[in-house]
Image 1 (cartoon, helix red, strand yellow):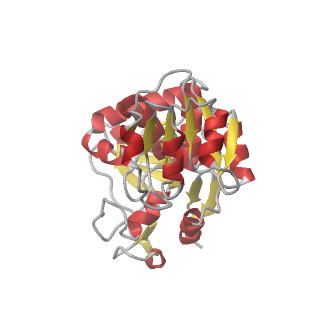
Image 2 (cartoon, rainbow, N blue to C red):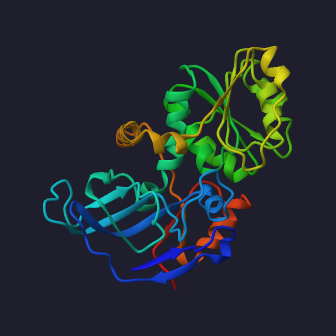
Image 3 (tube, helix red, strand yellow):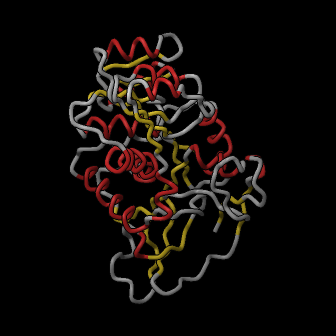
Length: 325
């Protein structure tokens, strides 16, 4: 089997291909040929040692895959050879095959392509966790989503619309804003050429209830100030830098700042997360949620794909396919 591996955290360019013997199956395990692996912004942060979670090295990145079952150990009855499955693998997805516990896999709905199936989990479970576990959102709320043309933002638009919210999508390019409109946003904001605070207030008729922020940086304070009294600001990430939020605007208007760290919660709430994953897949199967088709790169170009994500050159999600040459 071939995999991408990094021996020391710190530099994306140190990611290299390793060829090894195919691992043997243990009790309850299955082998899958990887068809696609989701690539997330956090993957590059972890490789560079910039994430709050520092994986042990040598480290094989890649947390979510879709694969075809090629072998099952004796006693496995929940999946069969030939079936296409989703695996929240945790680590090791940047590979051409994987050996996993059969209890961890889920069948992929037929309406999802390999790429869609391999790229929905982190983004959609973050949004589902935010709206159903962390925040107090209601049908009819108006929400501003920052970074709405990226994978995390697009999922928030989609889930927000499915929950009955009116969504304003803020993004830096026409392509990204158009993607957000296709996911159900009723209006968009050009963050490079418009006053985000003023435009959000205008579009929300002065009643902006929720801000979903995976971006941070300079947009954070503007967006917080756009909130109506009692509004909720959801801190999801800081791809543009950790923001400085004006505490007086939180206090004097009874606004609420809510932290949303699905990854840390998931590591301590495995069973609840597994149930949430089933719920989200059910919503996708029923046609209520609509993961987009990702941009595909071969695994030989994984470093370039991560740099393109870092430089915000990609609208939507990224999937790696198992080509190493």
